[in-house]
Amino acid sequence: SSSSSSSSLSRPADGSPSSSSSQWLHHLKDTAALFYGSAYVRYLAVFQMSFGFGQTFADSYLNSEIVVESLGLSSVGWVSAMIPTTAALASPVLSALGKTKSSKRFWLVFGSLMICSVGVIALIKNKQQLISAKWWISAIYILLGIARGVFENTGKATIVDFYPNENAASAFSNMLLWSGFAFGMAFLSSGFLSQRMLGSILTALSLAAAVCIVCAFKLYF
Image (tube, rainbow, N blue to C red; front, side):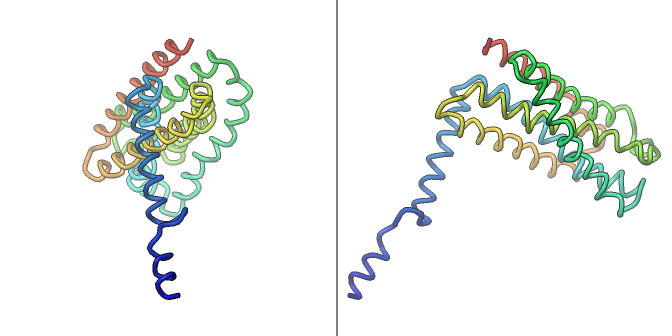
C-alpha cells in the first residue's frame, strides 16, 4: 500500500502546481501570440498603458508629494477615493452613451484626453503651485476618475466588440498586462524623475493613445 501511495503522490493531478504552471504558461503564450498577431491589441495597449501610468502618477507622486504637503496626510484617503467614486458615477453615463462603434471611439479618445490634461497640468504647473492649489488639486483626481470609468467600461466593452470569440480571454490578459506594466514603470520612475518629466511622459503617452484608438477603429469599421 505504501508503494501505491507513493506512486499516487508522484502523479500530478489536475489542479496540482505543475498542472497550474502549465496552464499559466499556455495562457501567457496565447496572450503574447495575440499581441504579436493583432493590430487591435497593440493599438489598445497604448491606451491601457496611459491609463496605468496616469493612475500610478496619482498614487505614487501626487499623494505623497502634493496632497500630503497641501492638505495633510489625513486627506490622502478621501482625495484618492475621488478616482473610483468618479469612475463609478461615470460608468452608467458611459454605458448609456457608448453603445455604438463611433460612440465607443469617441469616449476612448475622450478618456485619453482626460489623462493628457493631467499630464499637461503637471507640465505647466510646478510643484509649489500644485501644493498651493489646496483642495483644487481634487480636479486632477476627477479627471483621472473619468479616465478610469472609460477604461473599466468603454475599454472592456470595446475588447468584447473586437474579440467576441475565444480570443477574448487573451485580449483581456493583454489589457491587464500592459496597464500593469505601466503601473510598475510609473511606480519605479516616480522616485527619481521630476514632476515635469513625469508629466511629459504622461502627455506623450496619452496623445499617442488617442491616435492609436482612432487607428484601431479605422481598421474595425
